[in-house]
Each structure stands twice: as structure tokens, then as C-alpha cells.
Length: 66
Image 1 (cartoon, rainbow, N blue to C red):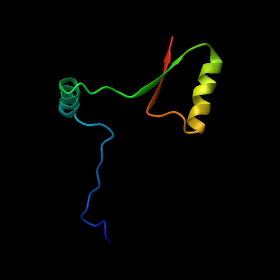
Image 2 (cartoon, rainbow, N blue to C red; image 1 turned 90 degrees about the vertical axis):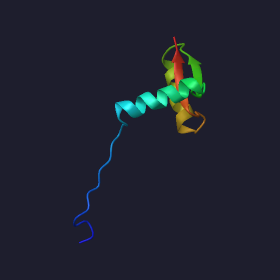
Image 3 (tube, helix red, strand yellow; image 1 turned 180 degrees about the vertical axis):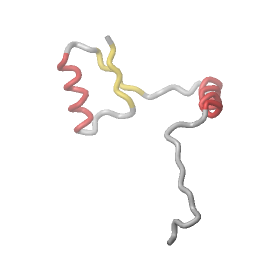
């Protein structure tokens, strides 16, 4: 069988050292996240964000501002 002798491993997150390296790189190079800010005006705001997700109008991250 193909898998005999092979091991497949994965990790959902990097090591602490790798996270530290990524954060250091981002700080040195002024890397900023791309976000869309939505002012929270009640439950309808959440519905608007989900509608935007369904219609592919949300790019990157949607952030609620309270």
C-alpha cells in the first residue's frame, strides 16, 4: 500500500517562535491588516455583514465598531 512507511502530519498553528518571527516581521515592515469596518447600529448591522459575506462583498476581514 502507498501509505506504508509514510506519516502525514500537519499543524493548524505555527510554533511560538514562528509566531514571534511573523509578528516581528510585521512590526518592522509596518504590515497592517486589510479590514472593512462596520459601525454597529444593532442586529441589522450583523445581518448586513452576513448578507455581504453571502454575496462576496466582504473582502478580507469584517470588523464591528461599537
